[in-house]
Image (cartoon, rainbow over all chains, first blue to last red; front, top):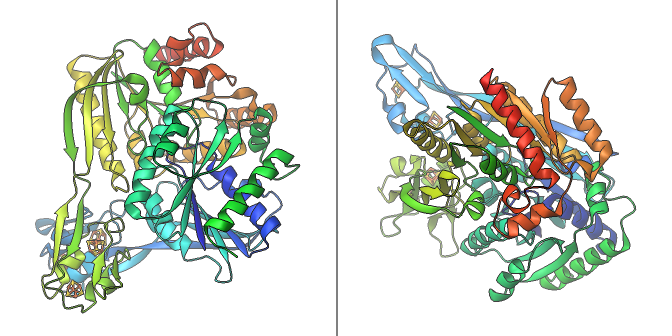
Length: 289
Length: 292
Ligand code: SF4
Ligand code: SF4
Ligand code: SF4
Ligand code: SF4
């Protein structure tokens, strides 16, 4: 069972929800649960497990082509096939170069070349880390190398690293609705959207709902920071008959705990109660038992 | 003409609130919403759209099932796992996973694959009460947000030169990926909004790693300063160790949420509150920075 936690808008509390869900599924539910941080541009989940131990860490790569000028006939077929303008061939100068920043690693140029002039080289895409948090099957995080713009490729690789023994996997998705988010939620069985009751929250929620309807993935919504804004988010959800899974009230002192990274310590009873109910709802919905 | 980009690394730190507040104090500026993936600035600006353009975010491939012999070559070669054998025992391309590289189209022995240009994105030039706004709407699940950012920034620049504007103010995207890179490239100043949380600081550090490569001056502001004084101290320490100028500290203020609900900038909604005063103070530092 794969559950993705997403939100159109950043800062709505996606990470807080993912971590609490992970913690409480283990606590109330007794299933082998794993947390996977797919927000590879800004992986933050690990900050909330200060005692966690890094068990494994590996560098992941993207293959970027390299042209051997000795074999190249400068026929330009590869650059014609490259949809991302990553190859420049200048016959007069006997120049054949690949711009790694533009390359999507699609492999088209390799297929194109009839002269065996192209080979592939590894280029660092980021790291994948596995942490033992003491909770369930631990945390896997992807961390994009600063300056790389291939976040989607890294997310793909991170998703492949989930523990085969896990019964429930929680994917903490990046903010927004573009390709990295789609990659994260694409094969999820259920998506939990986290929103806040403000016009920004509502606007971004609508786009995300549209996306999930397109992708035909079932979803429900958690309203975080309840009490801060207005009722428009509620009206929207009721109007479209979208499940409200939980409401988490805004509380400045709880926000302060988030700030210092200790939301899992001395959890207030109200919060614990909210997650307990949430998990019961998910149980029914996803027929987890 | 100087270009200022508001960024934060972490989403929800208050970028859009700041960009909108600056609109209330900056004179003679053009605005550009670089957060094309979840554009929100227009909710405050209420733009009157004057020009509308579609934007191609690349190609999507499609298999014409009549001609396909199910040989499976395309699925084997597609590096993006976009081609799947479906329950009806046919190869199909998932448009959300297809990156439009056209490899499958080129190698299919039956010529059964066609490629379509994807124009599910639009960008606009609008009039607003603050001046011109260039903004965009990306279709959900689209790629190439970086290219779209570059496109709308070019347009904003063109307008700014045309009307002799003094500033372009960009509301940047969250994160440090392709659209953030496109948003930083070639700008004159980055205003980094930091939320004093461990995640906020962590993300700000990653953003700094990126911005540093561009050698662009950075001004930092700490938003919701009183959320956790200890973490705020850590942020200040990080800034001073790294010689990043702290241009302002702003406490959490419920007026901010209210102003958004009333679709106003904080300066319009509550001109006398501390947040608004800080905005003037920050803006003065920015203009001084450029005049010396
Ligand atoms: S792998 Fe694809 S994107 Fe990269 S250079 Fe070759 S054709 Fe271009
Ligand atoms: S297709 Fe091969 S031979 Fe032709 S220009 Fe490219 S690398 Fe050189
Ligand atoms: S390569 Fe062409 S014929 Fe073969 S499965 Fe793909 S679309 Fe069908
Ligand atoms: S165009 Fe490229 S990414 Fe899309 S299905 Fe074909 S091979 Fe895969």
